[in-house]
Amino acid sequence: MLHLPGLTFDHGEDIAALREAVQQFAASEIAPRAAEIDRTDQFPMDLWKKMGELGLLGIT
Image 1: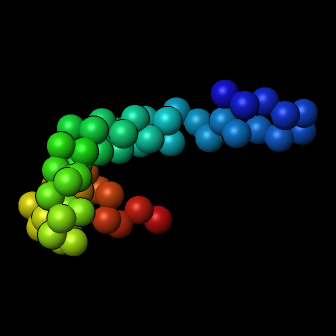
Image 2: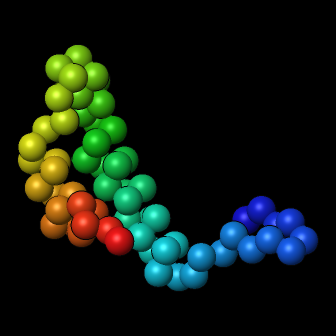
Image 3: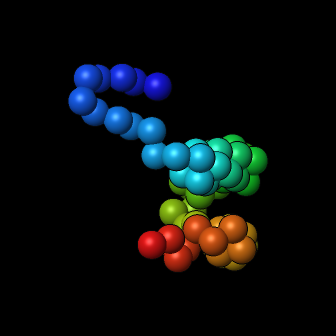
């Protein structure tokens, strides 16, 4: 974690858990299909559905 005097980049456990979940999803679901996504210039609809199930489409 970067530490600069007067600045705090620790966003708490909830954000850390969200970040970890997104990293795992990207590594397991998106990365293996990255070449296909690049080649077709289309993001697969099944991945949109999975992202929605994780709550990633409505983050506020």
